[in-house]
Figure 1: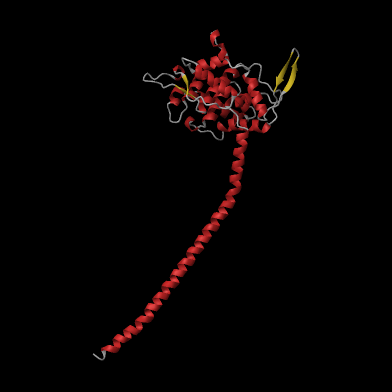
Figure 2 (figure 1 turned 180 degrees about the horizontal axis):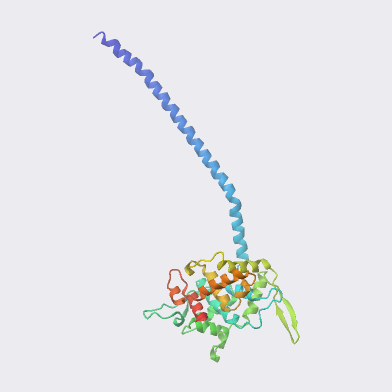
Length: 312
């Protein structure tokens, strides 16, 4: 038994340094983990600050571009008129008798895109687009006098009228003298004044032998070129073979510019090969069936009803 006592004591004596060494190792390792954690956090913070600094300038540029686009945002009517205006002379072609009805179609689509108008439900009989009535979805003012005037007419008219009827009534093309008050007068002149206020056009007087006429020559060529480029790219570089993937406003602009006989003006600067390709793709759009396109997801029924009215 005496021989066993020193062995136990030896075990107890040796156990103390083992515990101390384990404790020190644990403290060292925990300190190392803490230092590594702090270092990784600092590196991540520096990386985030660096990325924020790198992204700050592009974000600022995007905000500036958005601000510019808001200042010079044009309605569909103004875009179609701007495509039809001669830059230096400041007036549309005297031989263009399509732009008047085209501008009325622009108003209906503009109001539909802004959530003011829609078509009535097709019902169990599945009425065609041209047989369905236009109803007022919201009477909230748009801030545009022409649009608000057209919206007021649609809201107060009972029973409702179809898209085709509204294009004719707003253009004054009706045989019913009781409906002549629906005509929107001096539309081109009023749209030109809007473009003058936006800094796109200016106002001049020109003498045409027997009479004087107010003209609106182009002053801001940048906006006009941006518009022309948007139309060109939509059927060239940014062409998508699915109308559902088109931006609704760009799609409406192509259809209405063609119906107003001003689309050629946007394609005039193109090379022959580009012009042929652009017109080929425009014809593909014109050959679409509005009834079928209006039933697809995210389609605007009133937009396709206006297209049907011009392409029927």
